[in-house]
Length: 631
Image (cartoon, rainbow, N blue to C red; front, side, top):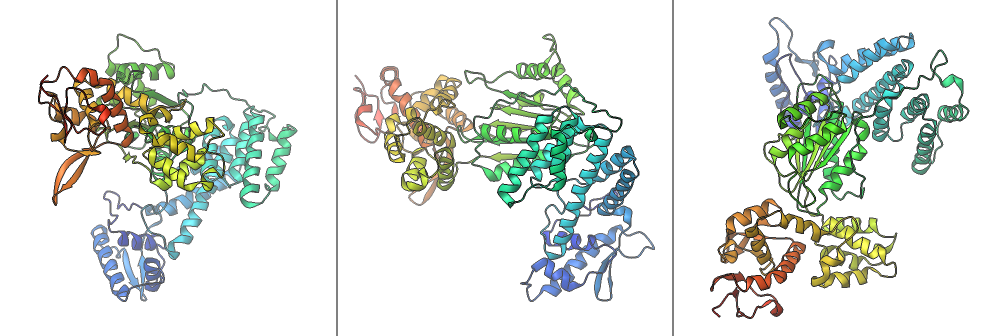
C-alpha cells in the first residue's frame, strides 16, 4: 500500500499504522467507529489498552498527515460524533479512479465503442501496481473490500479482453489469457475468451483442448460441469458456427513471427523449495504487470547454492510455467561450457542476437552487441535465464533493458553488483521434504510401506535433491528392488557416487568439472579434504607448499566447502566443513593421487589424519595425522 500527497511518500512504516490507514482510506469520507477498528486490528482478543493504543495510532497518523494539509482546508483525519473520518477527494484515491474508469469502460463497451472501452479499461488496470493491500494485515473490516475489488479487477480484465476480441486482437490476447487462467484456474470467463481467441486464430484443436482441460478441473475439484455458456461455445466451435467469426464474416487469422523460445526441455518439474518458488514467481509476475512507461530497470532474481541443490530445476520450471507472461520471447544460456569453464559474454550475447533474428558482427565490441540487445528489449516482454553464472562482469552485458522484462540467474555463490530485486539462497531440504521428493519419484505407496528405509536413503544422499533423484532413477531401473536394497547399496561409501548416477545428471561429473576448472593448487587442497574429519580448520590443511588460504577461498566460492564455527574447550574457533558426498568425491581423488603425493612433497609435510589403513602410503606412519617421512 502506498500513499502520496503528490510529491511525497506518506505511507507509514509501522505495520499497525499502515493497517489503520488502510481501513480509513477504504472507508474514505465515511465515519468509522473505534470499535470496528479495534476488531480489525486485534480481532476478538483486543488488549485491555486497545482503546488508548488506537488513539495513539490516530494521533500519529494525524501528525504525519497534517504536514500535507493545505492552508484553510479542513483536517484530513477528523473525529466526528465519536467516529473517525478520513477526508479525501475522488481523484486522490486509486480505488475511486479505478471504479470510475471501469464504469466508463463498461458503458463504452455496451455502446459499441470497443476502442474507447479498451483504452479506458487498460488505464484502469494500470492503477494496480501489485496485490491490493500488499504488506497490510487483513481483518474483517478489510476482507470484504479486498474480495470486492479483486472481483472488480477480474471483471475489468474480462471487459477489456472482450473489447480486444471485438477489435480483432484475438491473436495478441492468447498469451495474456493463458496467464490469467493459470492465476485463476476455476474462473470460467477467461477459458471462454481463450477458446474464442484460439478459434479465430485458426487453432480450433487448441480451443477444444482448453474446454476439455477446464471440464476435467471442474469435475475433479468441484464435482461440477461447465456452465451452459461454455457448453454452447464448445458446440459452436465443433460445428464451426459462423456466429463465432468477427462481424462482417471474417475470422481474420493473424500470423505473427513468434519470439525466440530458447528454454531447454525440463528434465524435471519437481520443486523442493516451494517457498522460494513462490517468491520467484511473485517477482516475475510483478515485472510482467508493470506498465511500459514504468521508470525502472528490468527485474533480476538470483538463485544460488551448492551443486545439486536444485537451482537450475527451479529456474527452468518457473520459466516454463510463466512463459505466457513474456510473449516476446524466452532466452537461455548456460554460462559454463562443457568443460566447466566460464563462457565469454560475447559468445552468449551472440546467441541471443541470433535468437532474435539479428546477425552479430564479429567486428563489433561486446558493448556494441549488448547495446543492440538492450535496444531490442526496451519495449518488449522478454524472460532471460542465465544458468551457472560465474561473475557479475559476465552477466551485466546479458541483461535486458525493458521494464517489463525479467532475468533469472543461477550461480553457486551470490554475485555482488547486479542490483537484484531478490537473491534467494537454496539450502538443503529437510529429511521430511527429501522423503516427499523421493515419494513423488517412485511408484505410489512404495515410500509409505517402508518409511524407515526411505529416510535412510535421503540421509545417505546427504539430503541433496539431485542425489535423491538419481537414487530414485536407480530404483526405477530395477523394479524388483526395494528401498531396503537401495539403502544397502548407498551404505557402501566407496560405491555411493557410482550408485548416484542417472541419465540426466551425475554428481561426480559435476564435481569433476568444478575441480577441472580450478588451479592445480586448489585441486591438491581439495583432494586432502577427503582425509580430514567432517569439520576441519585451516591449520589442518597447512603443509605441502600450497596456498591454503587462496584454495579455501576458491572452494568456499565454489560451494564445495562451507565456513562454520567449531567449539573447542568452550571457545569458538573458525572452521570449515563440506557435504558428505563432496567428501566422498575428495576421497576418490585422494586415492587416485596417492602415487603422485608420495614423491614430490618434502619430508615433514602434513597431509591430514588417516581414516582408513588402506589409504596409508609406505612412506608415512600412522598417528594423529599423515606425514611424509624421510626415505
